[in-house]
Every structure is written in C-alpha cells, then in structure tokens.
Length: 270
Image 1 (cartoon, one colour):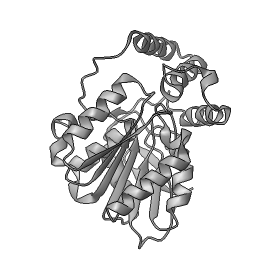
Image 2: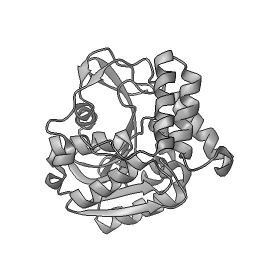
Image 3: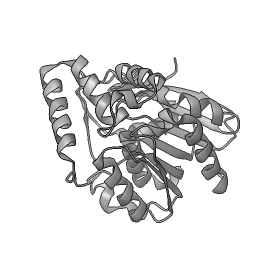
Image 4: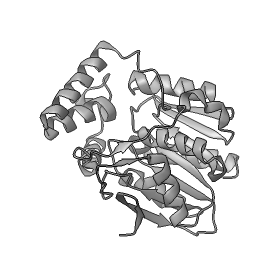
C-alpha cells in the first residue's frame, strides 16, 4: 500500500491511469474513506490520471495528536506524485478541504467539484428541529464513546437524510454506506486541523477555475445552504442537483454522477 509521509501522519493513496493524462484528485467525505470513489476511480482511469487518498486520521491514514492542515496534506499528495495541477473532486468535508487547497495553492487546481460541501466559515444557522435533535444525539454518542450508536445516527443523518426512512433507500446502498462509515474509523483521531484564515466563505471569488457544485435534494439544510453559497460565490460555477439522493450522490447514484462528471470534464477540456 503506497503512502505519503507528512509530519505526524502517513497518508495512504491509490493511483491509476496514465500520468501523462489530465489529473483528478478525489477527497472523501467524513463518513467514508477513499473507497467511496470506487466507481469514478475505475471509470475515469481510462483517460485520466486518477488519485485518491485517505485523509489524515481516516481509514488507512493514521495520524498523531498534533496540529496540521488538511489542505497542506492534499498538496503533499500531489507533490509526492509529481503532479503539478489537477482537478479537485471533494465530497462533504473533502470539498471543504479542496476549496481551502485551491485558495492556498491556486496554481495547482485546474477544476473544482464539490458534493454536499460547505465552505469554511459558513454560518451554521438554519437547521431544522429534527436535524438539531439528530446532531445532539450524535454529540451525545460521541461523548459517551458509543461508536455503534454514533455510526447509526451518522448514517441516518448524512447518508439516508433526515427526510427519509431506512426503508426508502436501496439495501445495497445502505450496506455500502455502513461499510464506508465503519471503514473511516476516525473516532479516536485527536489531531487538530488548522483552518484557513480568513476562511473560504469570504474568499470564494478568488477561485477562478471552473467549478461544478453538486448537492442532493434530500441532504441536510447545512449542505443545501452551502450549495447556494458556492453557486453564488464561485465566479465560474455550474450547479447539479440530485432529486433522489442525500449526502452521497456519487455513491448512491454512482452511474449518473459519473456520467455527469465526465460531461462536465469534457466541456471544460479537463
């Protein structure tokens, strides 16, 4: 298993495709590992150089209890692979990391795709009463060290979405969501990410690369508000909404998402 050594951590990664082809770097969600990108990774490797990694403290990337910056880790992966520029594709917190890296190192990004993401510094107001209840339940389970309950609530909140019941989703997707969440195994990680200052929410206009902003219509309010902020704030942004998905349309609707991503990449010669 290849790794990139960074101060205080080892970042596990995968690559596929021709290094001479346009590069794409995938950054996973907080309820998953790099394995969430299996469908896109395999498909896009036909004509791109694809890279994915487990972020520090997740999956197969152990990290120490130190201060660090996720955006610096992303660039470290590119540096280790001698990739000058890439399209960044990030889901949820992975999209936030990609946004921060694009602001920190604008010459390294050719295109930007976010899925259910919020920019750093976004106001967290607006959650529904049910969402607030579920967030409180997650916090209580985390404080008690009750990982089993935490996983159950996280999947209900993020993967299924507060407006759906477990019977509303495909059993195969539910099994995959559980696998990805359990595999993340980030609950004991105590490293402290150093946020971008000033935060991305006030600097979106600086990102001039073409952007595709994706959200599931069944996602939580926070993500839908983030979608609106990104569409309005990124100078060259297009929106894509999935009516039948929550936080992980690239997993739940993998075939359609991959097709849409390919079309957008082709339209921008990426």
